[in-house]
Image (cartoon, rainbow, N blue to C red; front, top):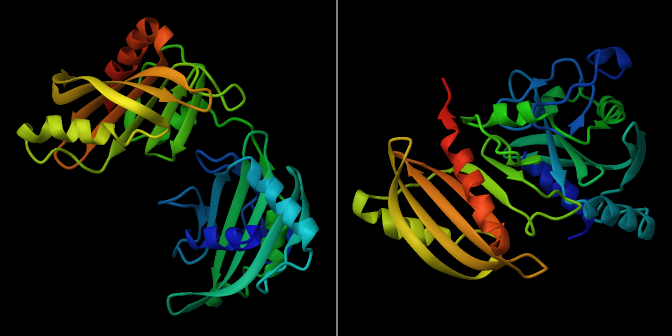
Length: 312
């Protein structure tokens, strides 16, 4: 699959003058990419981006891996005419030189126009996908979408308070972790001592999130905790050293510890997984530390865990 076709595929997941824009650049909560949305576009309710009130026109904003932009640039240079009937175009934006594609497609029984743009970021590639149904194409024209793309800007960091505010629970203790990163918008958050440049695995970090499953019964909690511990990404040669029931903020929970190897540097790590069981979902907290730093890292992990509170 070519990079240009990839841009079009990602879009599935998701007025023609300057007077048709909002007055200022708008960053949807959690987004590194902002723009001046066309009039009629408001903050989306179920994804990061914008949409019309009837949810017909969608503007999805996401981060792609940092090398995605370079792959698109190389493909453009190698084949300026594009492939599969999709011809890439370049566009100057405040964030730098961007590349976008346009294609006609179908969304169920509806004819749509799909636009995909990638632009350079410091530690990621910015991505914008737009879908316009046929009945809105006279307002949200190719020209209008292109002009909206031309207003795209990048912010290097999403404010910490903004990221924390997107989570379904309050996080009142950051335990001196220097980096806060949204892993899945509104669903998973990382607190870390490292960053994208230095790497995460060689220093302590903690992941917080909600999973949409829970133990079938109190007797099944141990099996459930150990089974889900095997799905922790990025680790290998892991073996469970402890797994036992605990109480977390008065609720039934389970603590599981694992010794494993993590990352490209083959770092020996110790991992703790805490589960707090709900009726239909579970809170999952994963703390990982190089084994040499474990004694100092564990109290920090526990402080973050104990500082989590329900919203409202």
